[in-house]
Image (cartoon, rainbow, N blue to C red; front, side):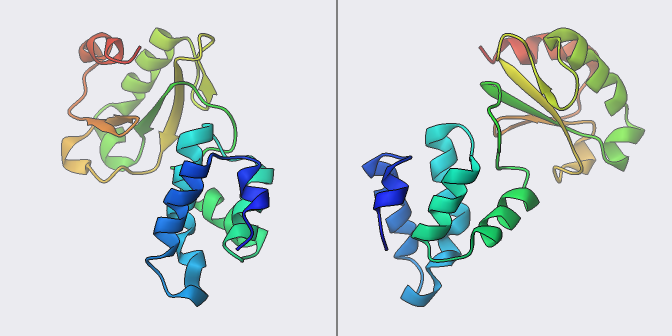
Length: 164
């Protein structure tokens, strides 16, 4: 593994954490650490640029296209700067039947940003996601890694105030 390219973007501590993940796999399958490597880097940098993804591909000895495929498949990866807090609102059928459209409209109004964009103050990015696996608790949203379930419009102010 060459570290020169990856060190251009992230700290030595981040590379060491990636190496810990790489060590969990057979030497000829280090690309299996790609999900964890990308999350570690994103945690440090905030998002994954093409140059960073290329560096990960080089470090894990895999094609850049394979890294791009991973990043484009999973919604947990960001390819552009985001707000400090990411709001994922489930808009799949269970949430739709239980009023997620009203939740989305209320959030857009409260944060001053439409789906797919970031609030002017950089506090929130708002996204629609297909499913968060909590259909019984619909409607629901995820802010960062925390689920907020059985949502009502009247709860939104209190919930959003928790995220400064």
